[in-house]
Image (cartoon, rainbow, N blue to C red):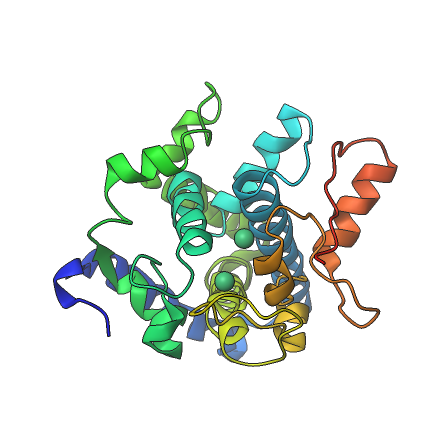
Length: 276
Ligand SMILES: [Zn+2]
Ligand SMILES: [Zn+2]
């Protein structure tokens, strides 16, 4: 059981999550429906979740599983920031803690504390250690250090980016583009990626028996929704590998994207290590 003294309630984060979920319902009002808005939502889901979070924050920055040119890295960080899952530095610090202390009290989204805690509950609280700015800097010392990357260390900058995108979408496609392209898209991106912390620690199969209490699993439907990140047991076994899906049915779309960039000569030093 989690030590309650380790946490304090975070009303701002909770209100932000609640507001976005409520606003997303607006996408289902008949006047806010248009096919262009649906396509826009799907495109931005791919751009911010797959390119930004799975390819960028996770496999590129957290695990350094490959390299890409700096200008492209900046674009990828922009895409990840638009997923609004915190600053890249904090996201990566939390993720590195997750691998180091999987499903223990030191893991910010400790799945041993329940599915819903790992899915969303942990973000409504400040974790004494994991949210300590000094600790975050220590864990993600290599993240967003260059001149152009530094603004991303301020979450307000990220919120302003989202507002700017919302404004551009409003000018082009009106409210349907705002509700589908910002609010509903954020909710889809969030739950798809959060499922990696929750469902991919609860459902599916284990190719590898990892030391207790690591509960990570390979879950096919999380694999599809989160662009290949559902092959999470494989990933826990070998975190530095750019490729997570290994069996013929383990569809790993983020890996296809990395492989495409490697063939095109854009991604280099790609580590694709099959766990043994
Ligand atoms: Zn995990
Ligand atoms: Zn990882």
